[in-house]
Image (tube, rainbow, N blue to C red; front, side, top):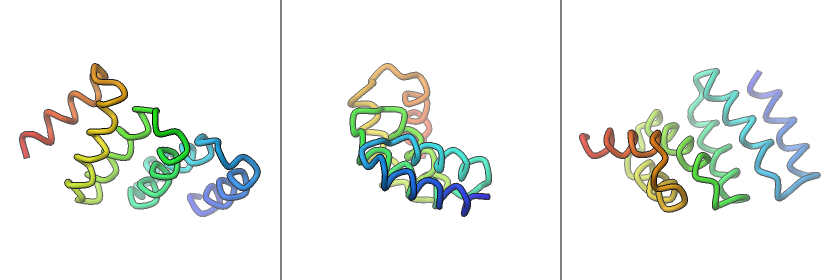
Length: 100
């Protein structure tokens, strides 16, 4: 369950405070379980730990959109494109956001 993965994430993050991957795992599980708010929290933590990882910002953007927070999604996408401007998934998201 997402709650179980959250507990594992928090325990692992306490031992490995700079490692983003426990949070990425929580984000992916939350996405699969249809819990975008939990995924947003998880990807924010992953981005905080490794602000240079474009994919984490892209996942954050996707989940913010699922939560209906377009302004924050645009900000997350901006960071994703700063780090990897030619990522096709991010470019596609930018196109979707520009049409809204």
